[in-house]
Length: 300
Image (cartoon, rainbow, N blue to C red; front, side, top):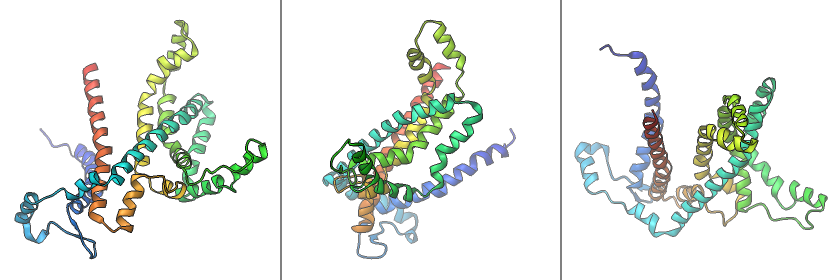
């Protein structure tokens, strides 16, 4: 059996990339999460010294404690932050899906000569700094902002609405920022769908709405799942949007993590927060992926 160098290079380069830029930082953060806070630089006491060799490593394993992780359960600010982030990320993903699906559907049904231009308009905001785009919503949503003036001009409201520094502003910021991540996978799934399936469903007596729910939507589920992951995962750990658009009542794990690292300078607890957040995101995805693989094996 000859060694396949092409397959080795094809698989080895991405695996090396993950090892260097994911597993290595993860190992460093995991090590800090088992350390003790200290008034020093860096502000923690390492639990393992590489100079001690393998004996020091086994001593670390035998004396390892989960004090920082236990602290996350004892102080309610952490699990409340996780739950609040989960709620905001879930609803933001749902709102983004509700807004992005019609856009993607319209793109997929538009004339072929216009699709490239329309897709370009969807990704055009990425040509502007993310921070500037979030800052622009401050000018739109603040009390003296454009939206309040526009609503007063229409006669819909008499006094300005308090929209900035609320969860409402956070939802708007997340949906606006991550909408292209939902639209593009949906468009890719809908654009390659065979239109003859819709015609066949209509010939069999179903309505347009029935054909959508029985044919179009099931076939677009891979795009729905991919887009939902692309929105939910970054929204769960979002920091910039809740920091700029949210108020003191907006509690998200990204802000809590930043405060622990830079305000409290408690790197061990902050690392524990980051590790738990990563597990909350990665483990369900791996389980879902495994379930999908089993379903494909059972259907084949």
